[in-house]
Image (cartoon, one colour):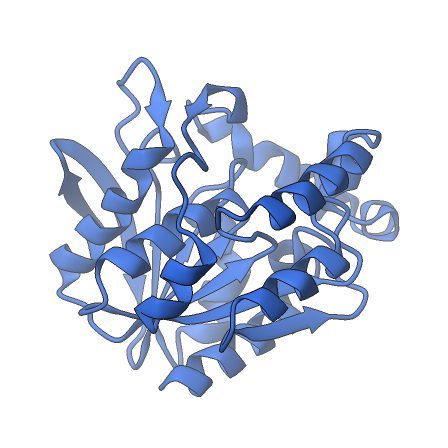
Length: 255
């Protein structure tokens, strides 16, 4: 475990294993421990780094509000602290927004970004319309049903309960996050950067549809697509074997 400093803010992180590096960035209900099924499975082959963004987990939560524009700096502070290069950033949901911006701003350290169940805040009017339509359907469901399948909730009540408890360790809540996607990079900027970008999503994601992810992949020329059959929004939790296999393929592809 370690502490990095981002603009005077203390950022908690953990480092496990050795080999090519993968840094995981949690979503709005997670923190570093959300990746327990990834750390256990992948640390024998890769350097696995998990981080708490400010307001989450063990990182500094003393600020009165949380600006999403600060999150990329939290990631970069950890990369600098550990002097990591050739890193794959894997961002889950809102974590993908921070991961993409961090990757674009520090190509000397970041080799690629996997946008898990997210478009990474890419600014494009046509994609924004598709995302808004997906969200309009998602809000019709209870929050838990947006994130985990009904079958999983019924067959894995203990893991479902633990999933619900993860967010209770965070001070920052989704409603507290400002400017999360404001001023995102354009498709042209992403493509011109040369950053290796992969869209990683589940066919059964109730928050972001497979059709929207496919369209983003088509527009971001040179990007990769990992669309996993049967997987929900929180694939990393519900179907870790599928998620871990996809992350391994992405890491190997950019090595």
